[in-house]
Image 1 (cartoon, rainbow, N blue to C red):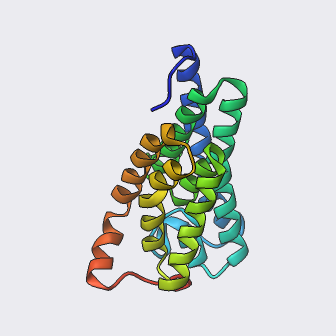
Image 2: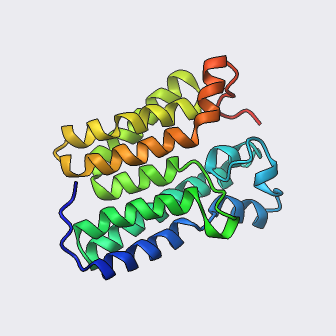
Length: 201
């Protein structure tokens, strides 16, 4: 766990701003701007990059991936630069919650995978790269996005400890638990063998 040394009111302000940044539903904004329809009525109904890919528009999916990751990473980097390392972890947590439960969409958001990876890259880039590589290898072997996300999330605290960031492992474990919670329907389909593969509309 981080040592909280910053003023509580300052950390509360960081939390609010990070949450609002994390709440921006880039997948929904991009698909609407491109005339691809309401993303919540396409495929799984999720607002993330994997579901954007189901529209058949790969550039839109890539943009969603980068922006969803970027909002988590930017929240962490700004909080660290302007306040301190304790604020960086607070920002990461609340940016992630913003993506999962955005105020703009009635608190019905995405599953947080890209945002999670962006936060991890900003907090501890070696562990973040390892988590991204974990996702990529699992995806290449299985072609199942949800399984790749679950494996990457589960191993993220391990990567943090291995690369010398044990003080961030508790946050990663909490975020990973939320990733698993948001993927409960996917886990059920994985067990049933009915989970769709990457690229399937």
